[in-house]
Length: 111
Image 1 (spheres, rainbow, N blue to C red):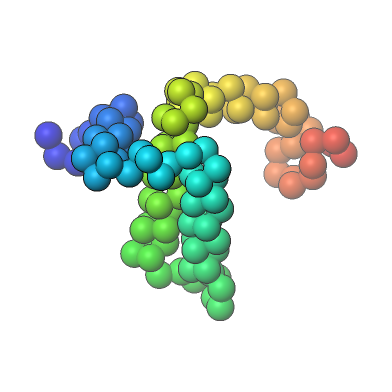
Image 2 (image 1 turned 45 degrees about the horizontal axis):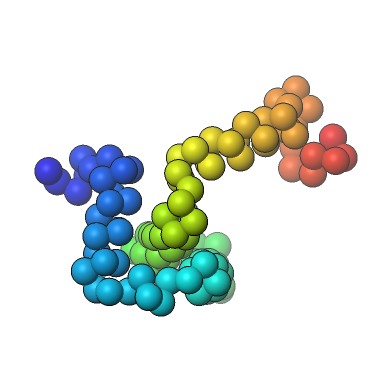
């Protein structure tokens, strides 16, 4: 199966398998993974440091690093990534009703 046709679950399993093969789980405490997410997010922001136009290759790589560590954190904590994303979307839909928030960036407590 080509990588482009892999499901999210297959990709998560690939991440877990690679981590296991490299024996990196010993370094992946929740604290270290949280640090790594923050560091990679800063590197993602660095793509836009001097211009609003980012190099697409660098942007993809940094975004993938952030997502990779987020998936690993979810796995480490025993969370289902899709489930927690949907729970947060449910919460956001309540906090930001479309009739009040469409087209505006106002924080929910000021709508």
